[in-house]
Image (cartoon, rainbow, N blue to C red):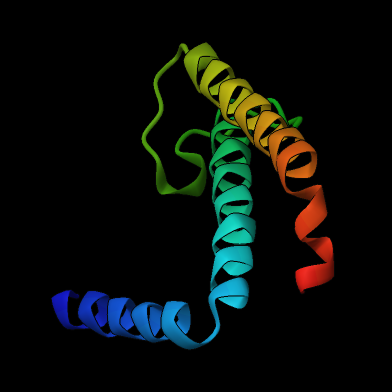
Length: 98
């Protein structure tokens, strides 16, 4: 895993040197995707996205009280939405750079 991290960091470093706009936009988009996926995992495991009650959804051990998964999922989804709004408001002038 360390070798993969080193390889990815070298590729990212080269990308920042020769293609900074692409590297920055990919980083911004991947940040949004990461938080959105984390939110969906929490919401799904908390039972907010399903009708059935199955223990151990997505391989995550659950107890009887799973309300905190839904709270974490809601927080991550709110953070994702706020991040999208900030990106749109702050970086709307970077659109022509793509």
